[in-house]
Image (cartoon, rainbow, N blue to C red; front, side, top):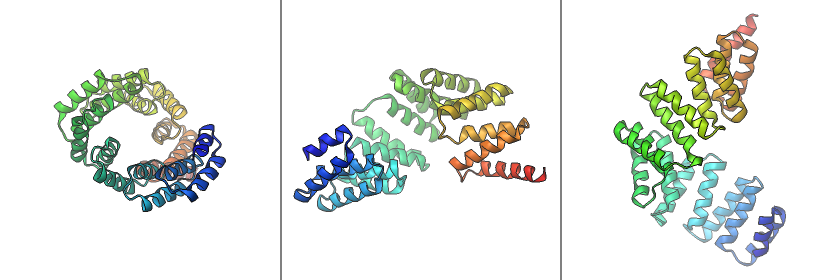
Length: 287
């Protein structure tokens, strides 16, 4: 197995695969299954990786290492959030103080519109002694979603006080969202500018700042921000959609049509993009 580890660290993944498979024939260890799955992940074969995680779990029931790897694969690489959540719950039934499992379940609860349950999980992490900017930011967002505005603002203040250079941009971005939700667009604009000052690659902050500039009638600034967001974060559909909407309003139909097609490629189920595409398609049909 040591040869396989050496090959994997050197990037010789095919050789590492052979060594781990050979080791698996002699000794079916937890580590061998985990490392072999990691090799297949790096070879962009997550389904094969899952197979070896599951084979390992058949021999070593409820092993935390294998369950964690399987849960990460399902969540990050395959997008199977429900199955991933079940894996994390199984981890907690074996190891109740596993912070990663608690945090991932809390995140899934938050995005499933269950902020009250998510808040309980995040507070559990805080009771275990963890106190960092990301945790306080998530607690603040959960409190805000639960209409606990005082706790939300105090939690965000604590997040800012413990923020590092890597997390400052995200914290300012989420603070801007809270400001938008309470109707303070001026403070929201300031927060998004601070997010960009902390992280010049933050595409979401560019999009939101562009929307605020568009609402103020500063069309050229909004267009520039949308183009910058597309350049920095091409995986986001929002800048493409917003730019298409802006181009439609200003009569740039060719650019609008290109942008809305890209937005639908990135997010085919987006209703507003579908409606705008239908409108533009009808316009081109008439012409």
